[in-house]
Amino acid sequence: MIAQNFDYASPANLQEALELLGGENVKVLAGGMSLIPLMKLRLASPEQVVDIGRIHGLNTIREEKGTLRIGATTTHYQVESSPLVRSQCPLLAEAASHIGDIQVRNLGTIGGSIAHADPAADYPASLLALEAKVVLMSAKTQREVPIAEFFVDTFTTALQPGEIVREVIVPVEDHSTGTSYQKMVHPASGFAIVGVAARVRKSGGKIAMARVGVTGLSGKPYRATGVEKALEGSAGSPSDLQKAAAEVAAGVDANSDLHASAGYRQHLARIYALRALTIALSRTA
Amino acid sequence: MKISGSYAIPAPPERAYQLLQDPDVLAKCMPGTDHLEKVGPDEYEMKMKMAIASIGGLFAGKVRLADQRPPEHFKLIVEGNGKIGFIKGEGLLNLVPQGDATEVKYDGDVQVGGTIAGVGQRLLDATAKMIIKKFFEKLSEAATG
Image 1 (tube, rainbow over the protein chains, first blue to last red):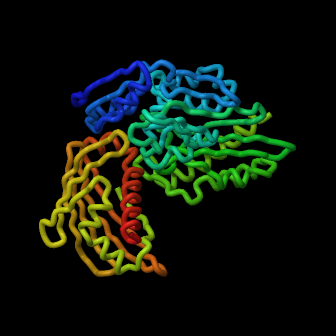
Image 2: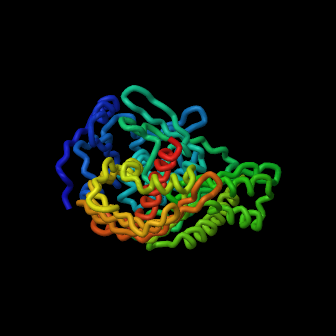
């Protein structure tokens, strides 16, 4: 199908883009991997589209004070293949490599993905496990929001009208930390039916730090703090991991659809949590 | 699609029931709705402007209340049509006192059709849950306000 008529702007700098966002019924176009299909089906009919793809400086990955700052229009492929991300924050590179297919990864962007906040997207699980921060910018101010506060609900984020995702900040990983992202992929859409990201660090034979992020299971991605608490202080034996992974869906209102019932999704979450934890632990130094 | 769950409203059942039957309160609590027009006994017409993520659309529809047994039970019948699809559903609402509050239990069956169902299947459940949650959050505000 063909989208409804709309005005298109492709500003050269961020300030110009932010001014355009003040209007009514405006949508930001980053990679267009979600917005364009919605527009073609006329599920979305913005009057104005602001393409941020040509803005200089938004498509960058840089290391700064123990963090990596990843610009909003950095594509999934760039994240997946960047030597900097692969060495300093391998979990994020691994998550990026699981998104959709190569065509989507070449166009889709990290800023667009999180701003859309699809409850089954791949990035959120890893970003939560990494305790990432998101830099949001409006014409007047700039603010930093912890990722757990950024995802409010299904398709709902902390973005206010007139605000844009400028960059995502993730920590440079301590090299003794082991990480892994494991997902049950929906074969047609490439989205996660369930996806689990794990980060584990050992110290003195015990697990000193565990972070677990989950996507696809419920209306919004979340940190499985029950799993983390069960692991921290344990020796990380196979039975410790199994006991901890069993907590992954506790208290979570699981989604149910024709691809997977709520009970099956919870079951998958436990299986994939165990896999992610086992692999992450095997990668610790 | 089956939808069921419960939500605690910080008001006794009589008050919660009254709020759930009040068209002005319902209009205020339903996301994207600003007005319910009475067209018959316990029957209202509404216009709803949906805006979730990038998806937006106007729905026009009807809401009907039936089988009322105040303050513990009623049936809600909803149907709506828009360019992007249609929705048709029935839900049973049971109000159970819980100290000073009321637990509203809902159990419904909703059919969604058209473009939105064809391409949005993967997301209908999560989206429906979010809309219901928003509705009850607003209703709680109305109950305490």
